[in-house]
Amino acid sequence: MRERKRLGDILLEAGKISVAQLNRALDTQRKTRRRLGEVLVSEGLLTEEEIADVLAKQLSLERVDLENTFVEQDMARSIPKEVAQKYVAIPIYMRDDKLVVAMSDPLNMFAIDDICFITQKKIQPAVATKNQIERAIEVYYSKQDTDKAIEELKREFTEALDESKKQDTELSEDIQTAPAVKLTNSIINQAIATNASDIHIEPFENYVAVRYRVDGVLFEMNRIPQNLYSAVSTRIKIMAGMNIAEKRLPQDGRIELEAKGKSYDFRVSSLPTVFGEKIVIRVLDRTTFDFTRDKLGFTEHENEMMDRIIRMPYGIVLLTGPTGSGKTTTLYAMLNEVNTPDKNIVTIEDPVEYMLEGINQVQVNTKAGLTFAAGLRSILRQDPDIIMIGEIRDEETAQIAVRAAITGHLVLSTLHTNDAPGAITRLVDMGVEPYLAADAIVAVIAQRLVRKICPNCRTAYMADENDMMILNLDKPVQLHKGAGCPACQNSGYKGRTAIHEVMTVGRDLRNIIARGGSAEEIREAALRQGMVDLYESCRQLVLSGVTSIQELVKTVYARD
Image (tube, rainbow, N blue to C red; front, side):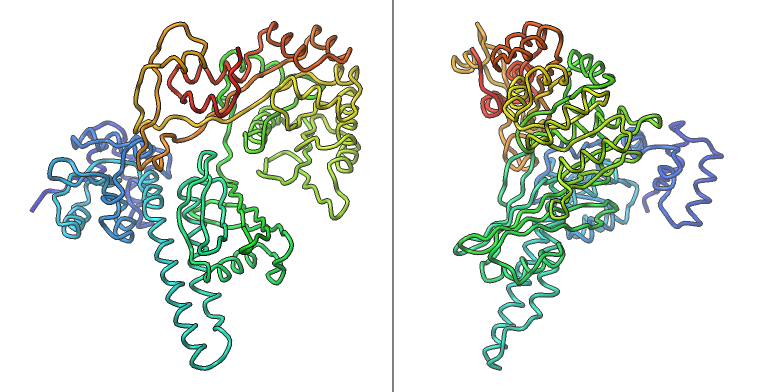
């Protein structure tokens, strides 16, 4: 019989915990019936990463980072999901004649023996953290769960249809219940597992496509038979508090769910199309907003400028960019930095995407008459120090925001423009007098999101003449791209980062704005005073191997 080493002894040998700490943890373990590792993590003695590192070193096992490891999907699904969840283990690939299995507890001989029996392969344990393994299980088994739910709904539908034919009655309502619920839940869980920002459910003539937006790009994950869609759309509309009988007009709704210990908010929108209602669901994870400026892609130079901007006592700071460029995230990160007990911060948003402790957040309600402009007028009577406006959409909101800025308030807001200089002329076009815009605006930040090259399939190549022209280079350099692999859905990209142009309004710019200067004049002056534009910001990421030249071309226009 194999001698089973114990985690506590290994951690003692490594000097990570004391005997007294181990004894206390073992006492807690006996009372709570939790694993020792979980107890040590919950009591703050060690992190999951530290335990995994020690186990790998002491046992001479491979330490794997599942976020950046190529996982063969067929291998991952070679054991049932229930077994993977039970042992917190997932097969990742074959090496020689052994199946490498990522485990949080490589000391569990029962798990190793069980997986060996199921797969009929020799097992080589590797060490990964519990959180990473659980997430990998959700990712690699989620499509399987959705496919099973679709088959179950098909079967229930067919049986109900056959029964209705026999009895000459209406189709049973049973198919609207359990199978539809299971399929809807599977679609939502799969979106969460793949870090999708949006779910698109699109009916066509012969099928219904389920697509997820991951890292800003849509991927088709599943197809639902057209005759089953009514049950799914009805279930979603019930969950979102929408009118299930209304199929001719667009509707909006909202779903709040708990999943995997996290709180999610789903914004649901339906749109009538030729073949039925198209449904789009925005996924918002309310528990993971921990963005700080160092996670938002600002360079050292831009961070120095941002330090000065957020300490402005008054004025307007504008974030610009297209929909989905992360403007709201950056605004929230800025609000977190200035959120202190001596500041009265009030926001008006449509919708409120994340709840921020210590900040008064107001939800726009146009049906009740609470517009941006009306809400902003009321906010000014609340003695605010800092005001955040979700978006400046009309002249009235722009005028009130400017008045608030020049009367001693710091105003943060967003605009939809292509670049930072364009925000100035956009405000003037809205009816703001140039001299007031010059007085009120202290900074404009333009932002875009670019996809990062997948670290698992990252490959190097030499720039050709076209690449050199786009990058404004005199000689070839080494560039990078993603070849595509299962870890990145064969896209070649995994994750996103932001590029910026940060324009502060100094004396020279203020004079140009006050006399009604064009966007190009403003741009030239901003570049002279040190602004790095979006093109250059993205160019540097291409040259450093973070993103590809294709992303540069897609995201910003190359300038001569």
